Length: 466
Image (cartoon, rainbow, N blue to C red; front, side, top):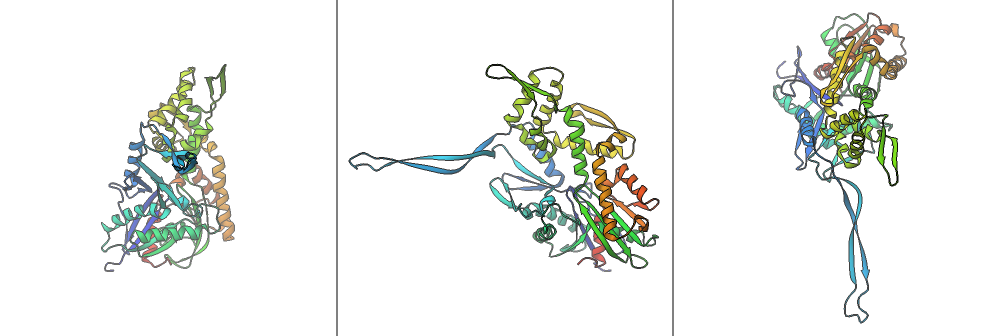
């Protein structure tokens, strides 16, 4: 085969992976020191120096732990007022100039900006640039460092400089614009170009997973294959029909929705942890003439808590003062608000989400698990049944997406011969149970975290991507 290889890159919402295929075997590329999984994160400091992956997240946590956020107003213009001179005309008019300030929007203590999940924005034409320390950065510029990191990893194992490859994409990018897929692919293609890839071939991620399976199991019985790729950001599905023995196939239908593990993690945070942080409690403080008691305005905190990359914004006085008031007023609720204070001051939101993911993974193999977050003194035992009740509506979305895919393929469930279950969220027992019930005896698990990257490398080697 000489130096001929196939290269596959799975740039994901939460994590990314890459693989090479030499016609015989697939090799995953170590993008971190000890792992082929690279967090899809970019950190840019005030000197516009960039870090990616795990180190980007670590820098974000380090730089925002224990600091107070102080927002200052930005100058948006100047106003001048001419005052009359003396009546004899010996002096000209005096001019008084004052600055006009806008809303307080600049965080003067911010050391760096973290961007995670940027893939979600690629299909939105209303999002063109994001401000980074008064510099407008295009979305392409925020993605390119991650792709450069992947190319550097490929250089370490590829026999030649990797300048071409097969790049995965979801069936549908997130967003409401009718042309979101075309826009997102155009932006992705430009970013790959800036990263040094001069021949970019895109391929649907669920189809890539099926290609990887067929390469590994060419003698598998069954003509029609349903792939269910349930990852961190999206749920992608496809129906393939094999055209003969081996790996030949044609794509019958594809479908994708914005449902992934991130939404499940946020649901756990909202339903299990918010009540332990003060949601639903009362806030008593002294007014001008009397004490005032109202519900604590927890809704102001929710979005910032659920999006850990910006939770540090809660360190402003307008957020911390009500929390400290509630601690000072005493009573049983003070313990909840101490948790909220510690989470804000020590920037524990990322660790909370790590604990949630570990808890979710433990529930995949046990009937109950402990959500253990010592940083905020939380230890909660939850059964699998309670967890499934918590995400019941999301599981219904999952089932509807499967139904919609079969409808697009114009096939009943009993005409599907093989169901490939892949992606980290596909390990949830309720998801496995839904598929097993709909397709009894026909569901197989396929490489949940790196199967797409492997399939992309095979598709590139076999010339399947256009």
